[in-house]
Image (cartoon, rainbow, N blue to C red):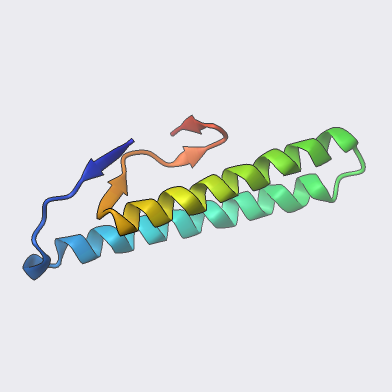
Length: 85
């Protein structure tokens, strides 16, 4: 879910909100990358399937973050394993 930020550009709130969106997305992307490589490097094919799911979650994060920045919206929640956290 997303919440529209109504802070005016003169106060800098909009820019700070966008910076927060990017910061949160970068931290989540790093976590997803760590998970992805653990799963992809596993000897078990079941973990390889999980790596594909993790990669899809990363792409969702990228898409949602980009949309939030372009629409001047900020995520209400962080994407985490298909659920909101």
